[in-house]
Length: 295
Image (cartoon, rainbow, N blue to C red; front, side, top):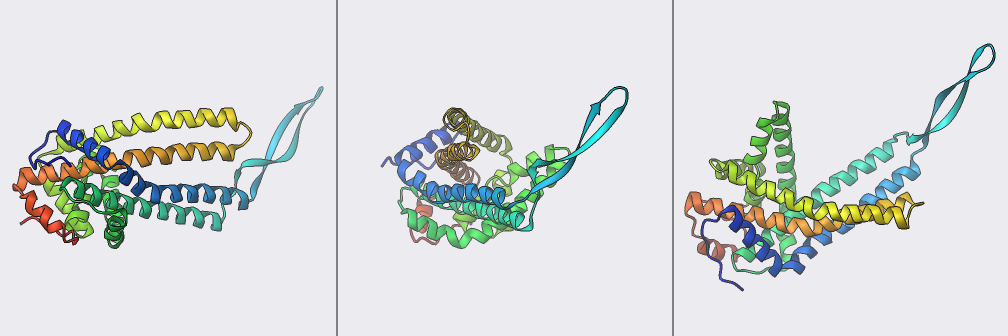
């Protein structure tokens, strides 16, 4: 393993190290994501299929104007609309699926951040250890996600710019919660303090992560859509399955890169702002407690 130099990093250096860590731990990282994302994708497909099967079609009135010499008569007929009528059970099933997707993604992100953090610090943990570490933080991460979403959403209602600023302020909320064992609101405050004075750098890292996501996901989605149209032209279910499979594959490939970039940005800002001795941080984290706060 390459000896890590704990020093301030440029945006380019952050991504250079992120890809190095990703390459050296590829199998473990993609397995961490696949363990959660593949079952969630199958659950989502099954849920959507069940809703379509169980939801009755809505019947609605259509009108056809017929012209006959010399009068014009209006004939009325009923036909089945293609849009299904909503049901309570269908809505509840969809809501449960969305909740499971949200919680699953939070756990996946936390386990990835823990694993990437340990890899950066020169340690190594197993997939099981990463998830055992992340599981107790699930509720905190969910609350933080909801709070950040509400604040950012409110900011976008205030002419967009405040929403962008709020999103940048709370960009490192998840790493702060995972690494420092903070509460939801404390993690948000910690992220804001670290990001202060570095909005441009945080924006650059987030923007490049989105570019990488597009570069990987768009070709996969295009290939899946074309393949579905060619091989399964008469089966909407199989076409949807292929597209969902491509989406899941892109998540499996991209999420470790984004997690690596986020945690390296987090450490970079701690080094710059606090002169934090990461050698001591590495030693303290070997205990597995994960509670490493600034002095």
